[in-house]
Image (cartoon, rainbow over all chains, first blue to last red; front, side):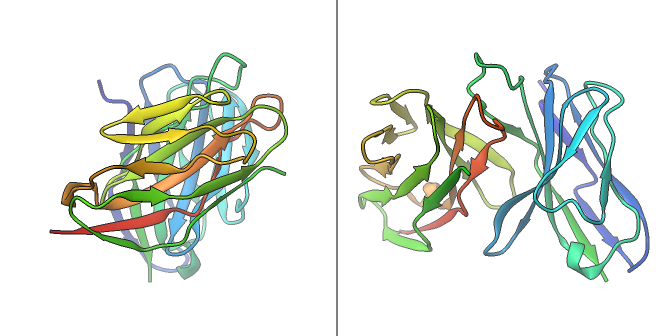
Length: 116
Length: 113
């Protein structure tokens, strides 16, 4: 039972490079999201999706792009990495945003990104 | 908008001590409330939840009661262990609003032998 799988777990980039953090879930969840976690800042929502083909911005979307072509996958793209994007990134999913769902999130193990 | 406030850490305790981590929330309607735990080097995982007023969530010796009158969901454990050392996040999710979960900033717990 894989749950939410994130790759890579660790990545070092140089300023200006691009990369994609992958996120996949095998629970048929409609809702998927990306957070970044920084010391003293808690979790901050970057982007989220309520279903295939639908994405929206969260609290800190600048510098990041997402797409949702399938229910299972929700990649996060950094087009031109900056040192301020050094962080730990978490993908999280949930069944749906319908009333019968209590809103519990299932998290991946995280991707630690360092931008030099 | 919705918000969650939890006590700042770190909270440092000796093994077998009593733990309380305070959490209060602001939200209209009837949110569901959660405690997540993050062990070192791992992602968050659900610890317990409560979906309506006066419900008590419990798991692994931890408990929290949904108090609508005080808009609180304090986390308690009667006797902590070194293995409980982690970061604890209080969160809410509210249908009818954005429904996107709202998290507190997290409270670090350090338990010494």
